[in-house]
Image: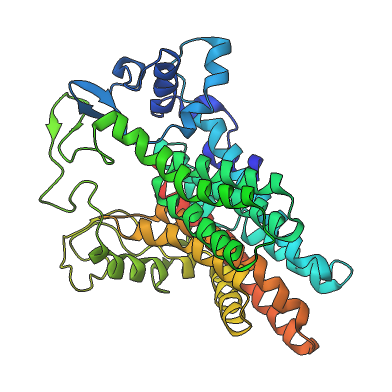
Length: 434
């Protein structure tokens, strides 16, 4: 998966200089951290692209610290640099996310490990959660994509260790889950509720089962508090408030821009955006087919005009910022089907542990869908839900007694998995920014 993502990042040249002009904000922020400050030096970033949000005359970024913290060891060895390193970081993060997802699938499929259906399930998971997943749409090594893919990696590692703790009661796994929830929230604030939901679930279980130790309750409180504290606390230190100022963005010419009026309202978050965004991210008709390459192309692009997505009440056309968008039903249809199966089974059979984990990761996509922006890279926020739902569906697959049902599911996978491979590769070809 790392090699696959690296190939896409470099346009399959495998030459890292292909993306030499990519924004290096995270490196500049890492350099600032070494110097004991949070504001960054704009001179360490390309002049044509600068993600500066000015507060008290100093340049800050609304992005978290996690991607920059990962660069600290590099800068401590080689010194100050303007290199982005995203060309290596994005594939590494995608590999970690995929590895954690596949390992979680293996944990759920373990009862089938000596059966043919177990091997088939793991092969389907390997293709549909790896090169056939929306991770491919994050292969452009820009700071937006890197923030999302690191947050996905953090969430998948956190859930993986949380599930291991549930099955082994080894407190080290719970501690690691806390660490990676903090890690994810430091990359993207849309993941702060993952730890909160998991922590609340643990506290409820702790109250009902007094056999759980007090340090488990402490870890649960850490899941609730620490990710939010790290994510929003850093923003407060930068801007004096837990969000960037709406009129602090400055473009490369040095002119401050107030992001209001046309096609969006800066960083506005509001539930009113949910109906329109969720329709866009789940509708089955968000692509068009062509005979020549790329065979699968976007149907929607822009916030106004003939190619705009469908706006639902209370929004009207032009109320959102929209880029090229597609949907989960067009990019990962098989895992989406598996989420439905796993959710239905968990509710019907009252599997509270599975419900708690599914509810936790579902918050990421909901928070992302409450923003004013609509773009295909935000589909990455749904990846943990799809990966975990697919993993949990292995339990239902193992309980299927009729061979005809297993054969039918295999045939469906043989159609939908190759489609995911083609669709995501085609869409990235149209979506890439450089």
